[in-house]
Length: 253
Picture 1 (tube, rainbow, N blue to C red):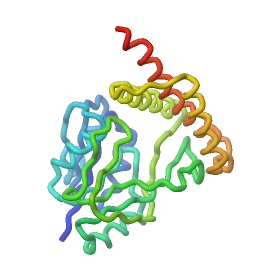
Picture 2 (cartoon, one colour):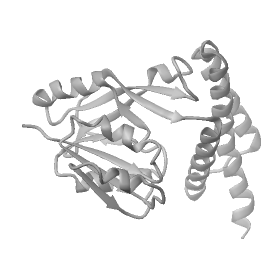
Picture 3 (cartoon, rainbow, N blue to C red):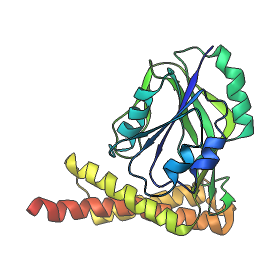
Picture 4 (cartoon, helix red, strand yellow):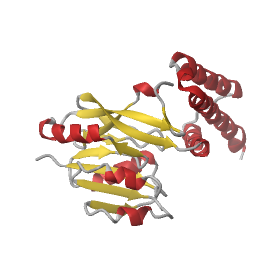
């Protein structure tokens, strides 16, 4: 029988982790890789019998996730974030798939995201599929510090039963995540020798807003859609502004 290991990375996820873990009843094993939680994350995790709680320094998103995958007992991996939840429909689908999966296949999972309490049907998020189920013999995470992804050599299919994503419970959470991610992305680009301009950052942000709000019908999501598109577009500009700043000031030292 095919076994599946669910792999999660955490840091201070006490607000999310129980919801996530409770949805993983299909998994034969749960691997949690923690990078310095100071809240009740570890305490909550240790309430689950089939769970291994591992600790490591922060290696970046890609390498930290791969660290957990390398520690798993099963070759089949379901990678899930702490702020995500397997829907009942997806859990049932996975139970029926287990016996018929070719080991060289991988699966994109439909993800439905909630933003400040509202499910977002547009803004481009309606086409959000994430590669989360794969055999580690044929795939692994890249080493990206942020916006990591699975590099897979087999055939990839889509599963439409949803994975729920509780990404931003409030505006502060969105802004804090944007500040963190843009700093990491700008630093990565800087270390690769990339350069940009203030004008370029402005136009990239403008086109992101146009794409999300108009082309991808974000205006149909009401006030929440407008806020999402505005803050997301600012995040795109901010990444370029930070890269510009790094090039202007750090290279002079």
